[in-house]
Length: 236
Image 1: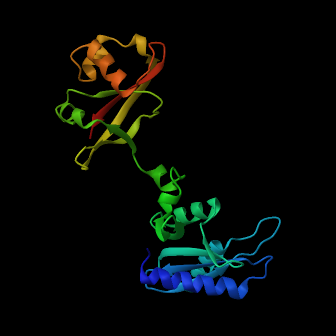
Image 2 (image 1 turned 90 degrees about the horizontal axis):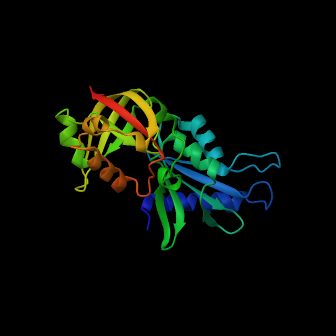
Image 3 (image 1 turned 135 degrees about the vertical axis):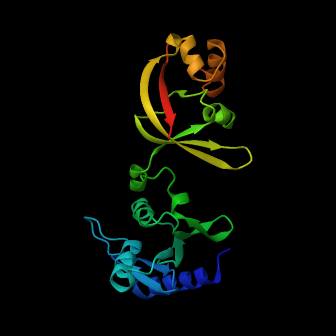
């Protein structure tokens, strides 16, 4: 079920698709909704070398008509049938680059629904993230030891990091998310079997045996010959 404003958006896109459909180069229309409530239309232009999709055309018209009025939702309709269709991969990335929270009207199992671009494009390339500190996700049980200075190291497998600014992130069972600003000071690869008591102490464990027990919980099947990264950090 979608909102009345999105129903109007679908109607506008459907009418535009039916009016402009030529069963050839122009078969998909799109309509986007702005924050101020304005509707901007677009139409695809097929070409065998590649042509703009309806969504891209609508974004271009938006840039020309009301660039300062943010896009909040978009829908595409296939002219020959009047069916709402999902944006293609290229359009999803373009929309994600514009604003991951843009709502896309798509056909779900119970009818039309609105889904954010970020939900339609999981694990998207996000240029914004390149400018953010790297994030080290930590078990909530380690928070106290980290805050008290008893844990300044973490052992990671297939989870690459680099020296530099970072955030320690604790996703708790309660749903709360806590972050602590930190800096990664070093990343040293080694074999699991070469870990020593000193590594266990810096990791906040009483013994090497406890460290290996924790590794078995976090990384089931990790062999002694497998490579691990010793990541050290300081709190800012």
